[in-house]
Image 1: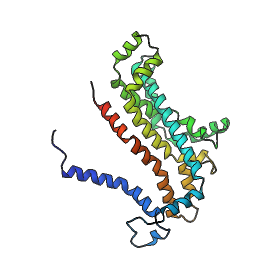
Image 2: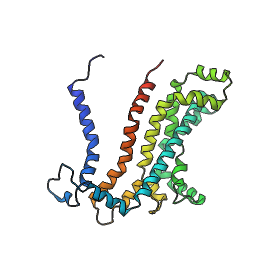
Image 3: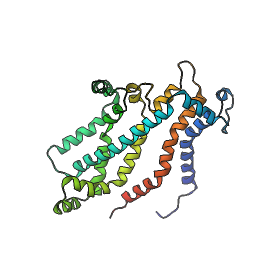
Image 4: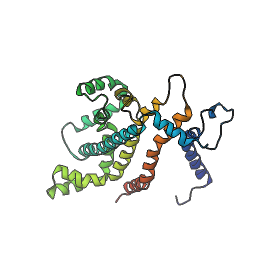
Amino acid sequence: MNRRPGFFVYGLLTAFVLGSCAPLYWSFLVGSHNREVLTKRVPPLLPGGHFWENAQRAIDAVPFWKALANSLIVSGTVATSVVFFSTLAGFAFAKLSFRGRTPMLVFVVATLAVPTQLGVIPLFIVMAKLGWVGSVWALIVPSLVTAFGVFFMRQYLLDAVPDELVDAARVDGCSLFRTFWTVALPAARPAAGILWLFTFMATWTDFFWPLIVLPASNPTVQIALQQLQSGYYVDYSLVLAGATLSTIPLLVLFVLTGRQMVAGIMQGAVKG
């Protein structure tokens, strides 16, 4: 148990890291050359000098900055809402005793087996009746809480918050919501951070529902990238330069929160 990892382990980890970075590097590589780069028998392995030129073309071709703002607003709002409501519901399922708790939890988990495509038509009808088609509200409101988030936080809070701690808060006169706010929510911080990050990424990269409900004049980043393609010809230098730009906010997010995320995971892994 005290042996340090050997050459094989480090080699395997290095291979996984390089394999994970390869798609991003390929996007940057193609985006930094002109459009004829893919016609060569042997594509170049080093970046060219046309990335900022192609990036500017992508920004001028679509409402990129508006799409970036929409994605930031939608992803940040949805991630924060999912963390709050999922932790609230997870606390109720984990620590409160009420009639129908188990059947309700089973129903919530069972909704994960329903394909998203089955709910698109009724959801679009609801959004149309509310007058939200074409607005970012059609992306935010249906995603305020997720079944996976509820189940994930419930499983974490089962062990992270002892029943004695909840009982002590009640004896001290805390209301139910204050018990959640001062006891359960701080204890759930490591899992909440991971859930926030994964939800932000999933919302940022979502393509199917925004393509249906948003117009070309008010897109998210993924829809804006789709607009860079024409029906008969695809300028891959242009498209991949835009794809690289859309990845930069996620990379910045990982750089800023990576240490806190690892610290939260380690904190949640230590008992006592």
